[in-house]
Image (cartoon, rainbow, N blue to C red):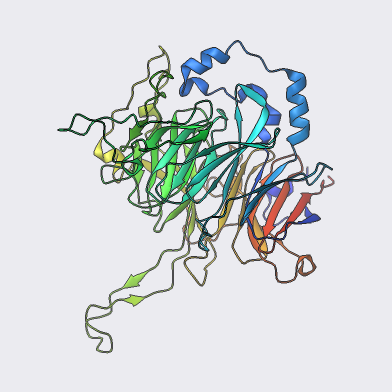
Length: 508
């Protein structure tokens, strides 16, 4: 019996060039229509009770109209959101639908940095399930666009720094999280309306509500925005347990009320999400003490975090600047100076959170009672040792510590893939996580699961290179993979090209 190509690193990959679409401006982000929406609509809001039991009870008796749902999926299942420097494009590479273009307001251009870009995501409101939304962030603002009606339905403000990432809950498609350079992460609910007036607690000894503002995890002193969407939880930065630098990424757990974040301070944190406040009170919740926090997993800033299984995460970091003190007998260097070494390459790490069953034991959600905050200790949220590294691989060395890889995790059939691209490069690396050594928790049939850990190996994968005829000197900026029986890779270029690569069926 012959193996699948993704089971053997020596086998050639099946991806071939299909088509090229020109958008004439540097591509910043690409996000395909969520595959899990079309595969299983029953799980769209299966986690609603984890955040809002009131809304979950209200929707319990509501059933999707299968005809309308099938029609919506048929229209949007092949859609891509493509963001460039000044506009959002919604395109259908495999259909004849006319593209949708959303122009952005005239704001100062973000600097050329991998963490400063337009972030995009698909979302869905339970009260209007046949009208998919595109959420995108630009500088410090969040916009909510109704793709079906082609109108802007919301604009939200709140962050004190540029927004660095945007992610939607996989099984509560109306809840999303933004991370920012202001050291905080914010969770939003699309079924609520923006806060019009501050509802802050007093800071003793004063008796009046505080107006310190969002930098302290409080409501804004002015309106939060217009249309739909409301911030319901702020994960604060600070010395107690929050991030001490810019937050670069976040990931919701599939079935538990937790979210993982990562950032400039080299730390990865896992936070508890309490039940949102009832809709009459509409109180903004805040937290500064996560369930887990550690800077011992990576040596440099952590750029992304993803959940792979119930207790296993995938994170990746930038190169680490290494310096040493020169020998004391060196006379050519000034006193107290340090000698620079080549940057240590960034790493791609799979690791396990060991305390998840302590916080969420079997039957934790029985009885309907949820505490506002779980009991944590300093050893949990400051340099926790409650983790075990399962696999660790290094990225190829780069000439600059600011040349960092962009990752897209495609955790589905036919295998758990990661596609990696570097800015100003012309190749994509395709990685099968099941081939990582010692990754027993990812798949029981991992070929090399019994071999010991290695920390000096580069990320194993297949290389997909751009043909010189595709665009001359144009280089890659970002890429993604669409999970199907024959997957699709979409790549965005520095001059506005969108390349489509399709996996050809391999004869057995």
